Image 1: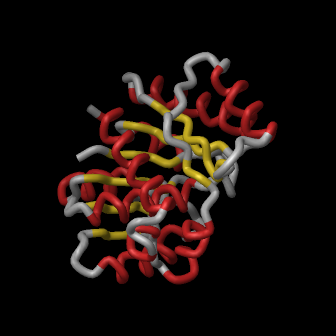
Image 2 (image 1 turned 45 degrees about the vertical axis):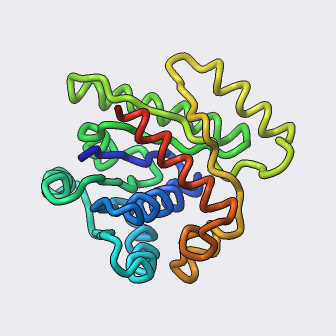
Length: 218
C-alpha cells in the first residue's frame, strides 16, 4: 500500500493532472486507489469526482478537505483500505506539505520545460530533504518531466532535462508525462485517456508511467 505524494512549491506544475491520471489508470487494472486532496484549491477532489464516476466498477476514491489537522489521520486511514494512495499536496511550501511528505513512500515532483520550473523543482527537492530529516528516514523522490513536447523536444525541454540531470540528488523518471489534449480534457468531462481512447498515445503514456512508478517502489 504505497503512498505517493505529488509535490511542488508552485501551482500549475501538473501535479493534480498526474495524480488523477495515474490513480485512474491503476484503478482500471483492479487495484483499490485513493486520492487525498490536500491542496486548498480542491481541484483534485472536484475533478476526481468526475473521474471516479466514469470508471464505474473501478475502485477509485477521492477525498477532499485534507488539511494540517487531519492529514496524518487521513493517510493512516487510506493506507488501511487502499492498495495505492496518492496525495495531491499544496502548490506551496507549508507545514501541510511537510506533514504529507513525512508519510510518503515516494515523492513525485513535476517539472515543466522552463527555467522557473527548474528553480521550483529544486526548491521542492530541498523540502523533501527537510521532511526526511523530520521523519528520520530517507524519503525517495523522482522528478517527472511534465507537459513534455510530444514530437520533437524543444530547446527549452532539452535544457530543462540537461539542468535537472546535473542537480545533486535529483533522479528523473524515464517516462515524461507528455503534453496531450486528452489529459487537459479530462478536467472537463472526467474521461481519463484510458476511457476516452484506450488505444491512444495518451493512455499508453500514462500506463507506462504507472508501470515505472511500480518498478521504482519495488
